[in-house]
Image (cartoon, rainbow, N blue to C red):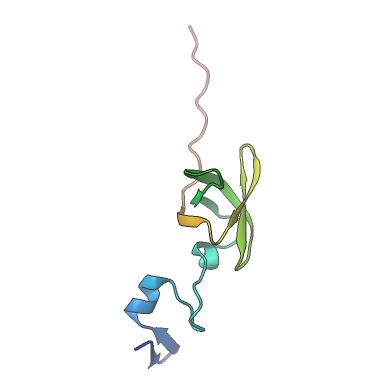
Length: 100
C-alpha cells in the first residue's frame, strides 16, 4: 500500500491522498499546495476553546504554520490547530452608496 509508479513519477494511493500524507509519510498541512498571495479561509481551534476562521490573503506558509493577512491584521495559524481550509474567490466589489 502507498505509492504506485507512473509515467510522471510516483503517485500516492487514494488512501494516502485522502489522509493528507506526503511522500515521506508525514502529514502535509492544508496549505501545502497554495501559492502565497492566494485568498484563503482556514478554520482553526482557539486556545480558549471553540473555533475561528482566518479569511484573507496567504502571506507566508511552511510545514509548521500559515500566516493569513485578514482585515484585522495578520493571523498565524499553527498546522496542529488547523481543522479545514480552502482557497476562496476574491471579495465582491463594494456597492456604490445609495442616492436618495
